[in-house]
Image 1 (cartoon, rainbow, N blue to C red):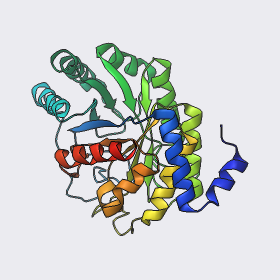
Image 2: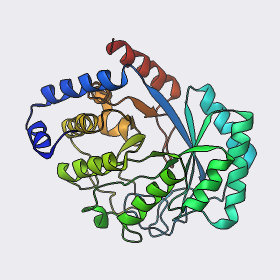
Image 3: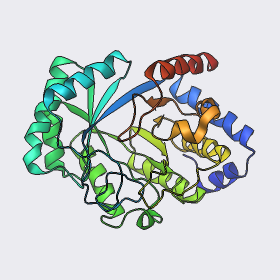
Length: 305
């Protein structure tokens, strides 16, 4: 395990040296593995929380769609399409602080139908949740729960005020308690420092999460962060390399905002240790075409040879 002194030394290294070390760690710990996941925005808008980056918050005036929980047929169809596109996992995401008890049975039925009809591994992202609720979702067929930390504990109050960092930690631990895998990461570019990003990585390491999705801020109109400028490509790539070195055994998956933040330098992120992508679009934003992402992944895997 890398010590605080070793982290200090890593931060002082030139980018080329840091990236080379991260790539070596990726190949040593995870080989040439590359995985895809896909999500569906199964319930959108009217969220009570004030996360400053989110277009679905009821605190802000945005163009995000608003609709109730989608029906089983529509979600199962999307899961089948995700599997055919090459996704290894499919996640149901719902807006809100947590899933209302009245909707739990419907979500459980959707999960069960996906497992029965499609067979793809099912993840869930339903906000703050208790062990009892998560246990019921696991029994229905969900194998992994997604719940981001978003940033460091220190910086979290600058991002969200309607719930605490401790609430997120408690939900992750509850998922692990009932035997679920956990996918947890955050967003780069919220105004945090490199130290904040490292602190989040150390928290994820302590939690022993199974997958780490990294988003790059999309400064959406109507949100408080609408005017934010993206991080420099070099800063993003260095942060990804540090995450690989601090979390050598987990999938580091690039998600929302990767296209705009990295542009022509997307491959650099995968040479710095990332080894997974979310495909097929994000909650309220479109991504690249699945075909483009699959071609890209094949070329990256070839580079790793």
